[in-house]
Image 1 (tube, one colour):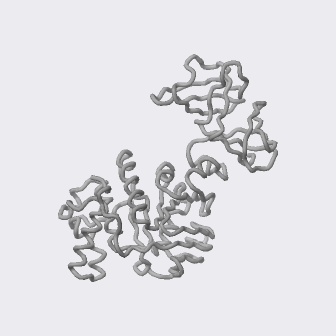
Image 2 (tube, one colour):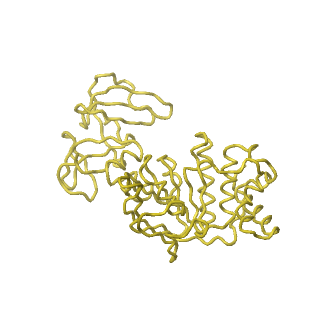
Image 3 (cartoon, helix red, strand yellow):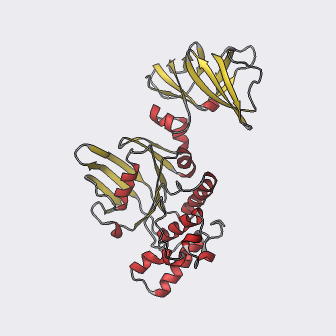
Length: 359
């Protein structure tokens, strides 16, 4: 069952902007988890905090939620300073990695928990439970024990329980990491569709780059407590600001070259390029899909053919370019006659090539 037949809105949800100002979080004297971070999230936007373990993304999410107190800095929801407010006064809810459902309760009781604690009238609780379950496509499961549900269904119950209190901001802490790959893709699409339909401000944490690119309006790449780059998924993939971002967002090759403002020179292979970047020595980031064989008779980037792996819709290649491995993925199989040790000529497509500072 999907969420496509769910009602359009939940009455009473009023999405907020989120403003994080100079946010700092220390653990003890020596550990800085979040280091003076500034971030603005627009009303109705889904922003993903992405990075490796220990980069500070979950700590930042927990500070927005009110589950961690900042060492210093400020957290604003619209014009309200919530920095020192406890979690239950923020109108913010979180969907956890572990679902955090009560195994001894059925679906109705799990979803109703937050409004029961708030001592809402019985009729209102019933109405809001059915409304929230309809949003996530689980209305017919209202009386079922949560232990009888699949992982994807349990995640939807957790989402309904978060929505029922009509939060100003919805937070997701690695919500799909307990699901298998196929289900993870389906549920992330459902979360994104629901978030867009509700227009609810959302902050999503993951270490999965594909998940971040697929679900986000903007992605915040974090490293060691600071923000490396903020941008749309397309911006981060096509024009990463640092080598770390380029390497973390997808696969990338890094080749030394030079740049004169109009052309890149890679070991004598020159190609035009458009990018606002200082002239001089550069690192040229090349996505694997930007590499192709040059037409017969055309001089390109000279390389030694090392190996290939046929994967059905594409073939993966490994080349040696002046002692450095260059990875490529080509649809349609590329050349099938090249053998290990052969000298080949390659060229680079316009998309998937970007300049970075020299290393």
